[in-house]
Image (cartoon, rainbow, N blue to C red; front, top):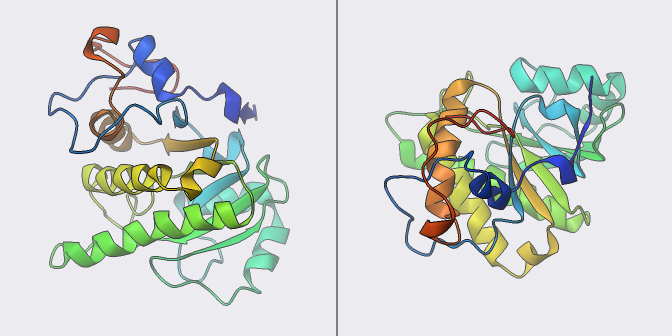
Length: 230
């Protein structure tokens, strides 16, 4: 499998300049800024192929592997990852734990346990999902990791609506990048795979990380290259 380095993952600046990322028709949210666009990346593909400092696994509370991206990460990392995860005693929903990456091309794996989405208590689901991103980012800083790639936490079998999940992810990452600790990160990458997640991030990212000026980019008809699609 081909390996993709962090430097080869397009930043939002590049995607806007090449007109391969649609500008949200809803406009930016309050406080949105383009100042982090060179440090935010978007990649559609297999997160296990990324040569970054850390990838964030959408794990379950046991940390012992599962389906989807969780299973793919464990398979490529090899049995040593499972052996290390057995020593961690699981992980609470909304939190994260870190391990070595073994056969993966990244340096570390951060295992974030997202919530099973509750239509009756979406507020609780949001708090837990936000905790996944916050704790993962803190772990990256604590371990002096500069590049981190997030899978779509809870948007698979846990049923979190992709748009809502992207709103939580983008707002939490923006808040962290605005902080003093956030200055220590070189790049935060959002990784999509399924079409519903691709569309969600293409819609939400420009609301939190808009282009530097409207004159730099016009809405693209499609976003078919450099990892972003409509």
